[in-house]
Amino acid sequence: MHVKNRGWTFITMIFKSVLAARLWLIAYAVLIIIPASIFLYAYSQRYSHILEEEVTRSMLQTLKQAEINLDHQFDSLRDTSNALFLNPKLVQYLSNSTPYNEQIDTLKELRYLIDNGQTSTNVFRVRLYVDENKLFSHERVNFFPMDVLKTRPWYEAVAKAGGHLVWTGVYKESFIDRDDAYIYSGIRLLRDPDHYEDLSGFLSIDVDAKTLDNMVSSIVLNKDQRVFMIAPDGTIIYHSDKSLLGQKLESDAILQAVAGNNEGVSPIMEDDNQQYVVYTTVDATGWKLVAEVPKKGINSRAASLNQFSSVATLTGVTVLFLILVFILLAFIVRGMNRRVQTVIRAIKREGMSGLEERSITSDGDFNLLEKSVDHLIHRVKDLMEETYKSKVQEREAQLRALQAQINPHFLYNTLDTINWIAIGHKAHDISQMIDGLARYFRLSLNKGKDVVTVTDELELAKVYLEIQQTRFPKSFEFVFELAGKDESDEAQKVGPTLETCLIPKLTLQPIVENALLHGIRKSKGKTGKITIRVSIEGDDLLLSVTDDGIGMDPEFARNLLTEPRPAVRTDGSGSSYGLYNVNERIKLFSGESYGLSIQSQLGEGTTITARFQCQRQTTEFTS
Image 1 (cartoon, rainbow, N blue to C red):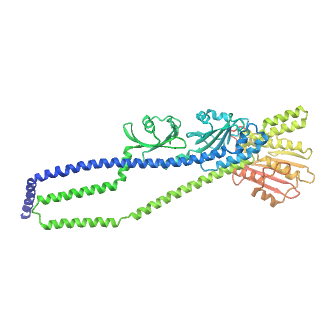
Image 2 (tube, rainbow, N blue to C red):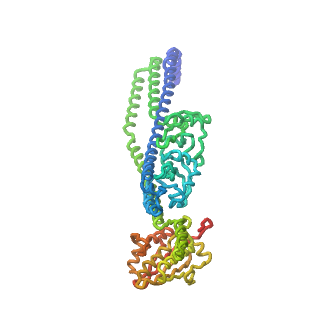
């Protein structure tokens, strides 16, 4: 009871003391609390504004770094274009006065230059648009007729540029040798070196749009960011939403914000939401790299950057008010004894010791270790992806290189002219051979396709052997055994099975050529017989060529398939293709378990068998 009365007495004393000190409380509110609140509000607003400026400036620097990387890439691609543009072989090819025989030799080196240009990691494809009468103009891998380019929306800009490099936006392109892909191109006009006022063609350096995706994905400004690229006229050059490519940017606020300056940060209001537009200009192309970031995202980032400063400020202000409260209470409660004051000072001292102890036990080293390990993991993943991509590109380049070695390109018009001259001079034997050679070219080209039916490949081998019979009369004979039937001197139709089975173009002809030139023509009598057999075993197709020529050592025969041999000209001394390349093409087409096999003994002839995986012809393929 006595303790309870003492408690009520203490509370009453405090209440009376507060009433007595009401003037002090009013003075405290007017002189300290209200000014401090106003100061803290103004300080918070000013500090928030400064942080917004610093954050947006940091975003602009991030965007400019991406722009520097883009400029570096465009400069590298421009150097590649200049190297091809100034190459004398390209100049010789473009000249209308260059004869066809010189064009053939020029094209070999030009093809080598194009392949070298495409080895760059930034170059997706090098394409030449030339007059349709030029060699390779209808190849449609690296060479195209100029009329193809005239339908493109940037044709007029390239034509007016007068030879300067013009960059297109990202667009979807179709290819005959691979899947469709999104690319962007640097295109320039080419002129006839002998008649500079005449248009000779266009040179295009194509780049995979994934390079832009990789660069843009490295730009991290905010989780709600939208990064895209626009041309000076407002056309969308690059966007993650591919359906917007080539369209005019709908936001007038963004277009007005980025107009007039090469770089900057502009606040806009769009759909009742405050936004920041951060932009910079890619010097090589004139495109604007634009990032649209909501203001609330910037405030969030500013808050995260200022978290430590905010906590320190709040703690300091709180301590200041507590000190002032303690001072005021000291004036109000004058009867508080020295022991209470001593206890308060002791509590303050223990509090500071606790703060120092927490500072000493900081785990900053562990945070640094975690960040380092996280960076290392991401780096290893990036290297693994780069290695995988390089392996895929290496395999594709190998396939293209092997195909290019045995991909003939001849002149129909020249052969037709020679044929009519022969008829005019009544040289019917020459006319017959020219006509057979034209049939051979038509079958071997196969409208630019890389695969043919078995019947077409047999017809090609038949035409080749007929030409060689004219060249070496009465020196050899040949027969075809198709599906178990022996058909002398002619490949008969064998039904839908062989007519729908596809194989790589120019696979059988090099084997037949090898049998004739290395087998029969090197025998003592230079006469013999060639037998071509075709059969299907389950899902496998077998083509075999047998000759009764001089044969070869078995060890030498095995080396023909395992070691590449130097090409020999087709002058009667050997094959210009080589069995090694044929074997590699079959493996790339069907798999490592398929290819060539050779059975031969010296003086007993040779049999070369090609085994394919039987791939059926679809309705989209026309021979």
